[in-house]
Amino acid sequence: MESLRPREVPLGGLRAMTVRRTLPQRQRTLIGAWCFVDHYGPDAVGPHGGMVVPPHPHTGLQTVSWLFSGEIEHRDSAGFKALVRPGEVNLMTAGRGISHSEYSSPGTSLLHGAQLWLALPDAHRHTAPNFEHFTPQPVNGNGWQARVFLGSLLGTRSPVRTFSPLVGAELRMRAGTTLRIPVDPGFEHGILLDTGAVTVDGKPLELNDLGYLAPRGDDIEIVAQEDSLLLVLGGEPFGEKIVMWWNFIGRDHDEVVEYREQWQSLVESGRSDRFSLPSADLMPPIPAPVLPNVRMMKRG
Image (tube, rainbow, N blue to C red; front, side, top):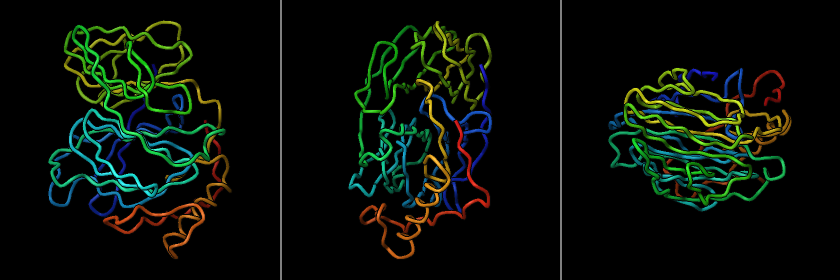
C-alpha cells in the first residue's frame, strides 16, 4: 500500500474553509477515473463559516458529493437545484461545460464530508451536462456497514451512471472488526481513513491518508482497531493522460486555455459559447485564476 498524505487547501474566499486534498498528487494523478479527493470537517459552521463556493465552471468530469454530516445547497447552469445530505450521493456530469455553486444550508451547524471528481473518458467528455441523486441502502455485516454510492461492492450495486468501470462506497467498522472485501481484480483502489484506526492488508493507514492499492487477484483485508469511518474508491486504470487545471479537465494545454477564455468571457461580458450561470444564484461567479507561465503537462 502506498500512502498519500493530504495537504491543506483553502476553499472559497476570505473566510475559506480548509479541506484536506489527497488527490491529485505529484506521484499519483488518478485511481481509476478518480482524479480529485477533497475531504473536510467535521467543522463547526458559525455565522461566517461553512461552505461558500460561488458559481464556478467544470469541463470533462463528474463531481461526486458525499456528506457524513451537514447539508449543502447545489444549483447549476443545467437547471438542477438540490440538497446534498448525509448518506445521499449527488453526481453532476459537467461534460462539455457546466457551472454550479455550493453553499452550506442555513440549518447546518456541523459540516463533514468529501468532494470527489471523476475524469470522463475521451469518448464521453463532451457529453451534455446532467445531474443524478441517489440514496443507497446500507448493507450490514458482522461489525460493519457499507453504503455503495457508485458501482458495485459487497453484493450491492448503485444505479447511478458513470462512464468507466469504478466503485465508490462509505464503510463504517466497529473496533475489533476484520472485513475481507472481494474486489474486481482489474481495479486499483484508494482507501481514505476519515475516523478511527485501521490496517489495510496488515499495514497501518494514518488518519486522513489515502491508501493506494494496485490491481490484485485477492481481497482487501481491513482490520479496525477503533470505531472507524472510511471511503473505498476504485476503478479500472484510466488509460488516458489528462491536463487538469483549476476546475477544468482537458487533453492538452491549448484546450484548457480555451476553457478559461470562455469562462472569463462569461464573467466579464455575460457571454460565452460554452458556459452559462445558475439562475438566481446568491453570489457573482468566481473569476478564473491566472494561467501558469509554462505549458501544462499531461499527467496520468
